[in-house]
Structure formats: structure tokens, C-alpha cells
Amino acid sequence: MAESITITDNRSGNQIEIPISNGGVSASEWQKLLPGIWFYDPGFVSTASCESSVTYLDGENGILRYRGYPIEQLAEHSTYLEVAYLLLNGELPTEAEFAAWRSEITYHTYIHENVRKRFLDGFHYDAHPMGMLVSAVAALSTFYLDAKDIFNPESRHKQIVRLIAKMPTLAAAAHRFSVGMPFVYPDNSLDFAANFLSMMWKVAEPRFDANPMLAHALDVLFVLHADHEQNCSTTAMRVVGSSHADPYSACAAACAALYGPRHGGANEAVIRMLGDIGSMDNVPDFVAAVKQGHGRLQGFGHRVYKSYDPRAKIIKRTADEVFEITGKNPLLDIALKLEEIALSDEYFTSRKLYPNVDFYSGLIYQAMGFPLQMFPVLFAIPRTAGWLAHWQELLDQDSKIARPRQLYIGLDSRDYVPMVDR
Ligand code: CMC
Image (cartoon, rainbow, N blue to C red; front, side, top):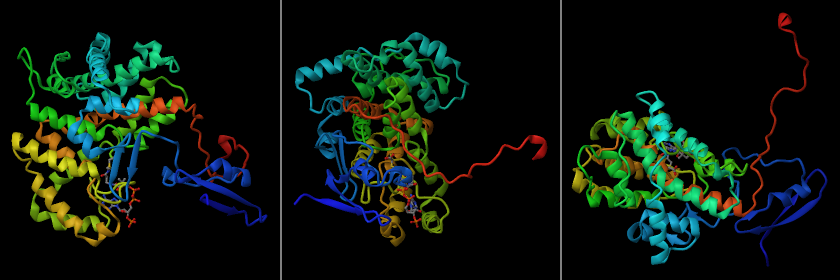
């Protein structure tokens, strides 16, 4: 028997049976019985806003798959560029497809000189690189007017390639500006992550070759951050995309969502928290304070994961590999102690609060020399592939414009009072 639910309107006794399909029930069916009665669901906690075949996430069991492939296998065997192809096309590329894809991305890494010289150079000397990135991504739409042609497959593909290729260039340019260093042009002989590291750190040497282990570790982090289904920034991408804005404008909105400390800014908050705790001896008091409602344990808890975030497990291993090269981040011991205490404490276990992707990623970034301000920027670079995969899917599904309802709780109609009478 097909699974369904039956809803009864107790005011009239009318009923409607709604089939359960793909784990959801259609709200348009509900509207047939109850027009004008809205679901009240702040934060979309119980709302599926779309059908998607990009990423599968089972938060209860700690499962994450891109296009069916387990994240653990992709982190071990794949690369960010291959994963980006997979997310966008649904299948892993053949050797020839990958060579063409890598070549396309490599030859779109340059940004227009005006973006750098006039636009980025116009920021205040200590501008936050994430603020610069949000603005620069939006500004790209003014350089590529063909981007508005969103239903032309050729144009769409070109903008996707441009965005994925230029994000590291913009990210590194924002960093260099914010620390007063000259811009470094992309080196197209390098791989994606190595090229980004070159644009970040190169000084006067003719060619910057990053430590291959560090470039690989960064690439693994890019794989882990490439998509995470309907998170806040992807939802922003879809909402803006649903108005048929160009992909640069939609991507800028997604970047802006990622800027917030509850989303892409959490790994920075973790480092600040670990620094505030200061020593292992202070960990028990800190945990006790969190339990009494004084702040949160940053890098713990997740809207969807109610078990250990599978990405956090991989990141913990990657951290060990990175620390072998860079030396151990002194905050690591505090983090490990914090995790140990929290995982055995009833407050955290009863609420299913486990380490998330951000708990260890900041420690790696810091050990690799990235300033805290760059953390959300490092998240935005790979998430661009996920944003674009969802944007493309949305357009192919001919989705409606995002336009939720509200439950009005304001005042009833009243007459205007002239200022002198107030
Ligand atoms: N530390 C202490 N208590 C917490 C924490 C935490 N990190 N997270 C949730 N709680 C408690 C919260 O106080 C509440 O307790 P009670 O039921 O007694 O009121 C309960 O757990 C449920 O919390 P919630 O705020 O209703 O859960 P949410 O699903 O709305 O929030 C979250 C999810 C990620 C915003 C939240 O867990 C949090 O603020 N975590 C810290 C910030 C963080 O690490 N964010 C990164 C998220 S992962 C990156 C990404 O995928 O974007």
C-alpha cells in the first residue's frame, strides 16, 4: 500500500489524503483542503524547499554523499576539480572530459584588470577580505553582460567556468590587498589548490611551489566543503536564482550568507574561543559556563547532523598530516580536551551536539598561515561549485520564484495621525 497521511479540518470535518513521496508531502495538496492556512516554519526547519539530486545527507547516521558517492571516498581518491565536475554534471568525468574541464578552468583564472586595479584597490586599507569577495563577485556581473542569458547553455557553462576559476584569484587578491601586498597573477602551470597558494604567498621568487602535502590537504578541505545541500548560503543562491538574476549576483548573495558567524564564520569563532579558553586547565570551567547558557561551544552542533559530522572525522585526520609539516597548532590540545569533555557530558550528548566541520578546519587553516579573516573566504572558494550545481538544477526544473508567506502579527487597520497630534 502506498504511504500517505490524512488531514482532517476539524472546523468542517473535510479530509484529504496526501501521498508521502520521497520522504515529503506536497504542500499544494494541503492547500486544496486548507487554502489560506500556512505552515508556520521559521528557519525552514521542517520544510523541503526543492527536489534535488545533487547531495544526499542523512544527519542521524552521519552520511554525506555527492551524486551518490560517499564523501569519504571522494576525499581520499578525488580532487576538488573532479568533484566540481561531478556536482555540476552528475557523473565523474572520463579522462578526456577531465582534461578539457581542467584546461577550461585553468584558462579562466585571470580577472579583468579593472576588477583588481580600480575595484579592489578602492576598498579601505583594512577591508575584510570576505566583504571584498562578496562585492567583487557581484561586480563580475557588470563585466560579463552575457551572464544574463541564463537559459543559453553555452553562456551558462561559460559563467560557471568563470566563477569556479576566478574565485581563488579574487580570494587571494582580497587577502593581498588587506595586508598591503602586491597582487600575484595566476600561474596556469599549477593545479587549482597550488595555484591559489602561489597567489596567496608568493613574494619575489619567480615561481612559488607550495609544499605538495599542504596543497593536497587544502584540496581535501575543498572537496569536503564543495556542497552541503540546502544550507543557508545555497538557499540564498536558490532564492536569488529563482528571480532569474545572473549567476554572479546570485553567487554574491550566497557569499554574503556564508559571511555570517552561524555559517561560514564558525571556524573563525572556534579559534577565538580556543584562544579565550587559553589553557587546558580552563576547559572544565568553560564547558560549565556554556551549560549555564553563557555562550556556545563553537564548532559543535548542527541543524541536520545529530551525530558526528562525517567531514569532521576526515578533517581531524587531515589536521594530523598538516601538523606534521607545519608543527602542531598549540590550540589543538585545548580542542581535543574540549571534545573529550563534551562528548562525555550529558548536556551535549542529550542534545546530540557533536563536532561539526568547523571544529578542526580553523586549526588547519591557522597552522597553514591563513589569517582568521580568510576563513570564510576559504569556505566560499569550493562552495561555489555546490552553489552553481544547485543554481543550474533550479533553472532546469523551471522552479517558481521563491516567495514564502507570513503569519501577520502586527496591528489592525488604524488611521494616520498628523505629527502635531502625536
Ligand atoms: N553549544 C552549546 N549548546 C548548543 C550548541 C552549542 N554549540 N548548539 C546548540 N546548543 C543547544 C541550544 O542551546 C539548544 O538547547 P536547549 O534545547 O536547551 O535550548 C539546543 O542545543 C538546540 O539548539 P538550536 O539552536 O535550536 O539548534 P539549531 O539547529 O537551530 O542550531 C547551530 C544549529 C549550528 C546554529 C548551533 O548548533 C550553533 O550555534 N553551533 C555553534 C556554531 C557552529 O558551530 N556553527 C557551524 C555549523 S556547521 C557549518 C555549516 O555547515 O555551515
